[in-house]
Each structure stands twice: as C-alpha cells, then as structure tokens.
Length: 393
Image 1 (cartoon, rainbow, N blue to C red):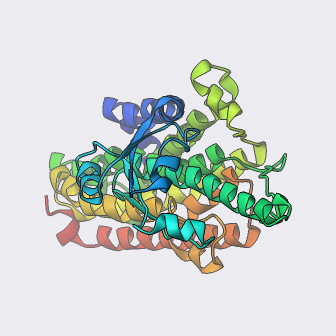
Image 2: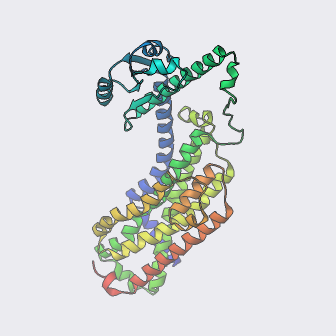
Image 3: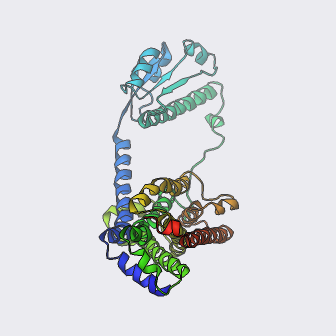
C-alpha cells in the first residue's frame, strides 16, 4: 500500500492541472473571494448612501400636500401620480415604489381614525424593495408624529406613544453581519475545494490507467488488489486533504495579512480565533476521506477519463446541493442533521466561524463521514475484484 501510495502521489503532482487545482487555486480563490466581497460590500454601502430613489404618492387632498415633501430623511424624491401611473412606472423602473392613500384619508385623519395605506413595489427588484423599506420607515416616523400631536391636543404627554425605546447594542464577544455572511459562504467554498482538488487525481488513477492500458501491469504486481485500491485511495485522499488544507490557509491569510482589501473584515467585527481554525482544519479530514472514496469509485466504474468526467456533472450536484443548503440553514440545527453527508461538515465549519460549538454534533458528523467513506472504499474494493469492471476500457 505504501509503495502504491508513494508512486501515485508523486505522479499526481507531475500534472500541471493538479498543481493548479490543488495548490494554486485554493491559495488564490478564497483570498480573492474575500477581497471581492469587501469591494462589493463597500461599493453597495456607498451606493446605498448616495442613491436617491424616485417614489410616488397616490391620493388627493391635504394629506398628499402635507406628506409629499415630509419624508426627506430617507433620501427619497417623491412625485404625485395616479395609481395606474404608479404601477406602470414601477414596472418600467421609472418609480421604485409608491404609497397609496385612500380617497377619504383626510376625513379619517381629522376623525383621529387609522388611515389604511398601501405600499406598491416590485418584489423581484432589489432597488424597489429598498425604496419601499425607506418609504415605509419615513411614513412610520410621520405616523409617530401624528400620534404625538393627537396626544398633545388631548392634553396628554407625547411619551405615551412610545412606552419602550429599543436600541440595538451588539455584545462585545458576539458576531456581526459580516461574520454571518462569511459563515454562510465559506463552508460552501471549502467543501468545493476539498472535492475539486481530487477530481483530476482520481480520474487519472484508475480510468486514466484503463485508457492508457497500464492498469493490467499494476494488477500482475505482487500487491493484492485490496492493497492497490487502498494505496490509490490514500493518494487521492492526500490530494483532497492538501487542497482543502490550503483552502483553509487561504482563508486564514486575509485575517492576519493587514492588507487594505481585507480591512472590511476587521471593521465588520469579523474575527477568526484559533479554535475556529483548528475545527475548520479538522473537518477537512472527513470531507477529504469521503470525497476520495466517492471519486475513486466513480473512476473505477468508468471505462475512461471522458466517461468519468461525464459522471462528474450529476456527482457535482450531489456535492453542491448539501453544501449550498448550509447557506440557508442556521448553525444551530437538530443533531440528526449531522448524518447528512457534506452538509454536516459544512455546518460544523459554519458553527466554528460563528463561534458556536456543539461537541455532540461534531462527534456524530465525524463518525457518519467515516462510515460513508468506508462504504465508498469497500464498494471500490469490490469493483476491483470484478474483471468486467476493471478491464472494460
């Protein structure tokens, strides 16, 4: 097994494609991703501060005259339109949102009644949703002022309208919005790094040897077929592990580099403690073992490298979907989720980045991933015993 492992591992790294996918790509992709995120976030923040949204107000009478210039704090430009014009212009992006007052709004306001107001927007457009949120906030403040005026007119203190004044105060050791965003994105990136690093290696080790006709030479060597399979498996596993470990290095470097593109991490309150780094590194091991078993089984089943690459499409989806699901699932999940392959490891990385640790979840995820990897290796060993599979190039 050791001889097979050393031989295959050396040959794998003679391929430039492997060097790029295993070494260069993981070290470059994650830092580049974090730098790009910083540029996008800062750009969007600046744009949001400067951009003035053109919104409409629908209605008639004194209430329209009073409020068409009132909500200026939200950086809004308000124009008076009809309802049909509002809907058409929102659809054509001439208006981002519109607020609609009923025809009897003045009467309801004078009678100290509630005025039902509609907020029109395009739910599928981000700018429209943002403008609607600003418009809603602006008229929320206007509504508060009306209540205060009514209370003063009745000889009551205006404080009756606001019994509680809530102010958000993030705790010192807590996370931030940037931390939350990274904990959604990076587990997916690291999982793909572990999988992508072993693709070329696994395809070449069995399917490639079938295609070149060199597998038969290896099979007549004194080593048993089980030793050959495990040696090749260890080689692919090592490649996956190197790729995933370098991806973690690429994750750590931006936090300690002090370079300007990564200043947003510190400003956003994002930190990476040693425990998070250790857990993230540890979780790459079951991912690498699992992916190595799956990729080698696929390579053994395929007649040649072209066929193996054809199978990669559906397999990539099987890996991508559980990894992507972690972007929409909270880090605090049921213990049974630890049994879901790929997703369990990605969730543990997400928990580590958010400084949330569940020892039972981690232990169960390790055990489940080890079982899945062992099953993949056993299937591969069984395939190596079948001449019809092994020599069908």
